[in-house]
Image 1 (tube, helix red, strand yellow):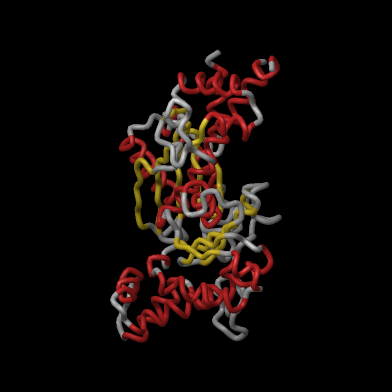
Image 2 (cartoon, helix red, strand yellow; image 1 turned 120 degrees about the horizontal axis):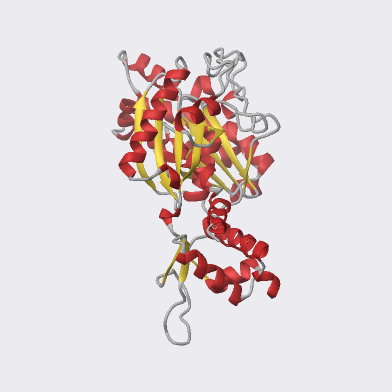
Length: 398
């Protein structure tokens, strides 16, 4: 028992306890002790230390807790949301979004600007800097309380090297080092991630996938990709290109995709192909917001276009579900607001094409975080470092 209170062990216990609360807030002391294998005395001592430092908070209103012998429910322990913050940056092909997230994953402030990211990378970094600084000012958050900046980019990223695979996806980004460029502008550590992987992290930590260890987040926008969480951790593949669902071949003699192949899923089911299709059928330009409005108004042409896209996405997803057997598929991206018109054909295609045990065990649900899934996930990359950062902060105080 003495070893639990040695300086090195005490700091390790701080980290473990903070990690447990990051992934499972609202837990009693007894639950934490059982989960971490620590004595009640150790848990109490570490919690008291963390509470005095403003890093955790205790409340008496936890859900479904048995009352103690004196009739009062046990205290529920959670991380204090204001103990640390992270900045998330989401670069789409046509927008930049910046958000400040607290330790509970709540967006305290965010800024959005439409911008041609593909064509003007350096200028997009300037836009990101301005948006991040504005969001921090509005949130009244000092950079000293910011762990770092997470960045989601619409291209595969090699996690080992930080290399952005821009060829055919971000045409003017060759040779550019986004992390270095943004660190220079923001003065904070920067981590890069593919935007769909970031969306998966956001939903896993703070959204529809909270508590689910095996899930796929499907982003249907100008690109179509899948972010994977397997056994509780992001899966990127050896070169960072896992989950490129949009480049699954669907039509042998189809349109040429930006990747150089023919008939990729993106050529028939992304938002650009759908708005183009509906524009031609109506004889007038139809933007994405109009397409979504037409779907909800019951327009047969718009609903058919979206439903066909859902069938195509579900067909492509079926093979991945057979291989990976996830518990959950979360549908996000710009087309997700089409709702059940999109989701039902995806579910039907999965039911038709996936082996029975895998089909019966997977759920297909809409994103809980919506258009902010990617920026929340980008911030979450840094928030996952919070337990170590907070423990180090406490250790330096003596």
